[in-house]
Length: 100
Image: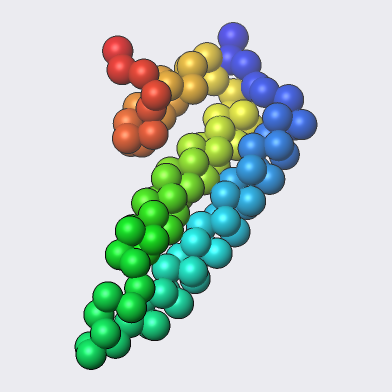
């Protein structure tokens, strides 16, 4: 028989996805501001390492948001699939932590 997670788990993961997206937006805003501050005459005005750090953290945050969003879908579904199986079945293998 297919199971379904509890609504509290669904809401928790939904909230985490929303928070992750907000954090990504802030990181992207920070990176954008740094890039806008660069000038042709002074291309080293901004530390490239800082820009890359913002963008790398944002990329990881997006994956976290995607994973939490999929957890909301999995929690609301009636399924016997493990979460890792759910990700594979729905075409999100890139979000899996383990491989079969």
